[in-house]
Image 1 (cartoon, each protein chain N blue to C red):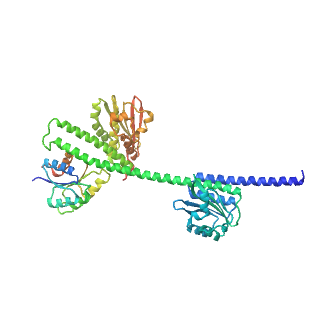
Image 2: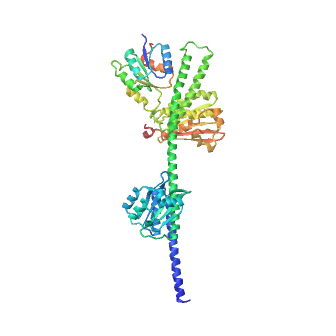
Image 3: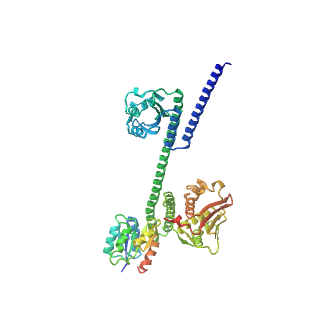
Length: 124
Length: 436
């Protein structure tokens, strides 16, 4: 069965790029456009990995990550923070919120895939 | 000569002597007042000095400065001398409308106004309060700055009677000095206010540029991302001919991203948000990274690319990413501006400092420009900007980064022979310098 990735990103273009690329790479992509939706989709879709944008409307990526990690059975689900902040302290904040890795925008999809495979293995 | 004649001469001499002494005293006091006006911008100190000297020299009982608030047509009591606290408190509470008082009259006429007996004047709050305080005579000298009324210098006496013309003239000089002091203070406040406004405007601008650069990166990320997916064949196989075009789209996009990041850096520096992220690093491998990123560029221009890295360099503490950026900038510039010859990186360490230099055999930099090139938006000439590209911000950022580490960055150059950029960097950057 294909592995499932929850892409949390409020910019439609960036979400589309990830969807197209990750689908082409063999993953099932679930999308959420804000922090609240990401928590709801995490519960209903049980993804294998989450790509979490930090700057999000309604509920930011830090809080969404905390809430998802607190769900029963979600502690081991990897969450990769994707942030356009390149300020000192952002990575520490993301990791403190429970993120397992941290990527700054703009990233190359190919580079991102390498990181995802590091968590999910090469079987997709 | 009779005894009477001699007596007359003696009396005349005494009178002349006293006159000279009085004149000297006046001049000394005026000099003192002038010094107070020019040496301090503390308005209260200046006006207090003026009122005190004025009362002393005129032999009056009290003196005060009243400020004229032109916007509301009213006077307010400023500095005083010789008046009881109780009297001062009463004066301060008064609502002194210009129209009704001697103060208003003096300002209106622009000339000193004598009141030999204030009880003979019609009633107004200030006059009544003065009479109640036991004052009988007043001399009011308007304070004017280029015809604009600023206030009045007032001398008060318990005894009724005229003020001698010499005193009136002297008080006129004191009033002129007071007006200068008031005008200086007003100009000073105006400039201070303007510079505060400029400071705030400049911060807003930096914040705006920082936000804007940040916003520019989002759509650019989409452009670069889609181009990469097209090239990867995610949307189906691309015609052979379009592949190099996609490469061009991506390389131009990356170049644009680099420019945006540079502007973002400089605006962060200006907004005071530029922070170092201190980690341990190996300078040798940093040099290798920079070399591998730039050697193809050097090869394209057929330049010799050499490095001399000393053995056993200590492990450094600093912002590895930012220092790599500095080195990339220096090496990138060296390659960019050199058409033939070599680019050489030399690295050593001594006394807790790394010393690194990047030398080239380029056109060199005129001596008078060697400092200016580290200023923001500065390049040697604008034709260079067009020919060689760049924002003119790289070296300004590089120097800021090095200085934040507690180091120094400078250049030595000989026209026609080449340039050598030197960097001196503490092996362990001070924690304070990098603390967020």
